[in-house]
Each structure stands twice: as structure tokens, then as C-alpha cells.
Length: 374
Ligand code: 5AD
Ligand code: SF4
Image 1: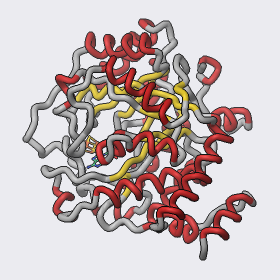
Image 2: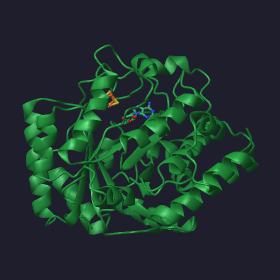
Image 3: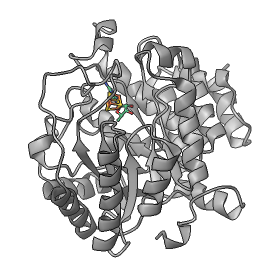
Image 4: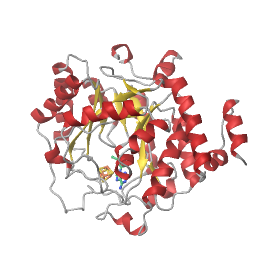
């Protein structure tokens, strides 16, 4: 296999195989990598433009019932305090995001399934919609829930949901999760979310111990089969208090960043009109990691607007950036850093993916809230 042939297949709009995608993920030569990123960027520009969509990320609680083997806020990690923003603080964050012109917000927390939590989110959604006159798009990232819960939150005003599959390889999934996790249950949640009417996002961790390039290639095809609207994925970064860290004593930051960028490019080749996020895990490995993500094919950024006083307690992985930066400074820096790579932020819009609108127009299942989208 050689790069010219694979690029020619892309130009001819042929569907790439697992072998071809894995070949691209394995490119080591800087010039080869540059050609891959260039192709992905060209496809991005053609399908979603050289524009960046923003989601203000509010990590409102680090309380979690789960114990994922890779995660710094897993249940058994007693090394940091647990927090939960109160309703007023979350509403303040929503208002700030609206005023900053970000257009949409993501509410993310550890996983909880008790009724107190479920109804709290429900009433918060109604209040956020009310407070922002329905102008702010709201994405939830609150893990696995029952169909009834997904429906209650949808009816209360959420229209997008992010649930990472983490890996589409069931054997690897089992190795990085405790026994009470179940791959099929998680995948089923993605179907339920779609059936409920959400725009669905998923993603994986890139460079997990034991993960092969073929696994990542299969992940890209999994996203396509699930027909998802958005992808949020980032490099795996060991956390010293999480058991999986033992398996990567010689963690290679540069290699991990490179693989993360190549994966963005490969997913852009496969899902040409989806929203793909340049996540903060990229930034943890390189101060301009997210901007490099944009050049590799990503088109969404999720600036963290959680109050700095809570951020140090929300460390999924070590080295999370921006822990002492306030939200306003963060926004100005974003505008500049995005302009520096030749892109423009589209403020004041929900920023749904062209993929979502195409699916809607073709009569397949999708959010009935599209008409309210902007
Ligand atoms: N490295 C990278 N990403 C991680 N996540 C959790 N722990 C880590 C880690 N150590 C990601 C998971 C989860 C999301 C909220 O954070 O993919 O879905
Ligand atoms: Fe909880 Fe999510 Fe971390 Fe798993 S990855 S322990 S569900 S916060």
C-alpha cells in the first residue's frame, strides 16, 4: 500500500477499508502526515467550511457512580474533593456563555442516575431555556441513563447528547472498564438517544494501552455505521490515581498527540460533514494542540467555562490546561488563536452539523428541534 494510491481512492470517493485507514494512522514520515492533514483539511473546508463552532463546557460536578479504569474522577479515587455547582452557578454559566456569543453549551458531569439528579437536570434545562429565551443550544454529556431519563431531558430542552463509546472493540472495552460495564448496553444507549430525537455525538480515546491502529480504523467506521452527527475524541492520557496508568510507564506524549491528530484526519475522511471536536486532551499534550486539531480536520472547540475554583477537582486526566484562567480571558485567547490558523469562529449559532441537516432532509431519524436551530 502507498499513500498516493490511498489519496487517489479518497479523490475517487471510494470507501476506505480498515486496512487503508490503519495505514493512514500509521504514517510516520512528517511529509506523509502533512499530506494526510492537507487532504482532511480540504475535505473539511468543502463540507463544513473553515469555521469553528463553540460549545461552552460546564463541568458542573465530579461526583461519579462509575469506576472506569482510566479516569481520574472514578468513584474509588478519594484523592480530591467532590463538588457540585448549585443551580444558580450553572445558570450564571449559561448566561455568561450566551453573552459571550458561544451559541451553545455542554453540561457535563460524572455519572449519576438517582431521581434527585435526574429531576435537577430536568428543571435546570427548563430554566436555561427560559433564561436564554431558547437561544442557547444545550448538549448533555451525562453518561448512560434509561430511555425514560433521556426522554425527560429531551422534552425539557436538551437537543444534543454526547456519549463516547470509548472504543468500538468489545474486548478492549472490557479491559478498560470494571465488570459492571457492558459494551452492548452502551451502544444501545446511542440508539436510544437517536430514537428519542437527540443529535448524537460519540467518540473514543485514542492510544489506549492494547489498542491497535486497526481498532482505531474500525472506530471510524463504527461512527459511520452509527450515523452520528458529532465526534468528540481525544488522546488517552494516564492519570496517576487510575489503575490503567500502570500499563503505560513510558507514556509517549508526542506520539500520542500525533496519533490523536491523525485520527481526527481519518475520521474527517470517513465522516466528511460531521462536527468533529478538537478536545482539551489535545491541548493538554501541546499548548496549540487544539489549533493543530483544526488543521487536521476538526471544526468544533469546547472552551471550558467552569469556574476556576472547581477546575482542579475535575481532572479526568493529568495536566488539564487552563486551570487558572478565567472565562473571559479564555474567550479572547480563543478568538486570536483560531484566527492565527486562518479560521473564523462563528459566534451566536447553535452550530449543528451539516450531516444532521442532510439526515433530516433525507427523512431519516433526527431531532425534531431542528427548526429551532440556528
Ligand atoms: N484520558 C483521556 N480521556 C479520558 N476520559 C476519561 N479519562 C481519560 C483519560 N485518562 C474521557 C472519556 C470520557 C470523557 C468524559 O473523558 O472518554 O468519556
Ligand atoms: Fe465516571 Fe465518566 Fe470518569 Fe467513567 S469516565 S469514571 S463514567 S466520569
